Image (spheres, rainbow, N blue to C red):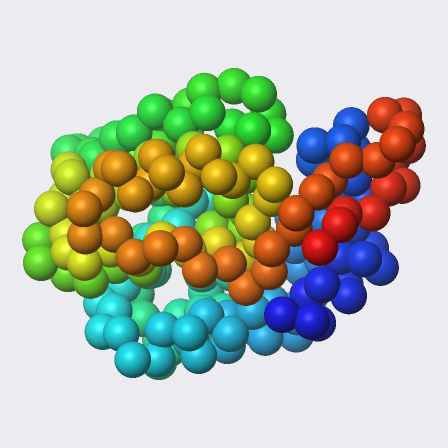
Length: 201
């Protein structure tokens, strides 16, 4: 997706050769026009697939999932919570997920009331880095909730995604392949202290 690629080249910053910082158009401030176009791209890719609902994880995945939902005819969205609260009472599906950016493990939860057996679910997230979040969501959707078929997708795939993709495929036999709208092949720069390096596509 050329528009997204150019925006990342313009505003994205690589930190420590492994993190892509895009706070100014997705992770903190949202460029709604750009994200709507990302959602339309997902709708185009899955136009021939029956989808009952979209599943994502808080927080940055919600904006992308919402844009895709609008483009797909206002599909319901369910997002996994990363922390327990008074709102996470009742029966929950859970999965342990390691955060690549925060370098810590957390338990993702989705209420059992919002996932229904037999549905076709599209999993959307903003990044597929190590694949941990997608694996966790796939575990909830495909094995715990017994939904079928499952499609895992990401708006941007980083260079460390290969292992994550294999884990995802192994966790659900009916899983569609990941379908990123943009692939980043390398985040490395020649200088580790260079916080203004650009990703390589």
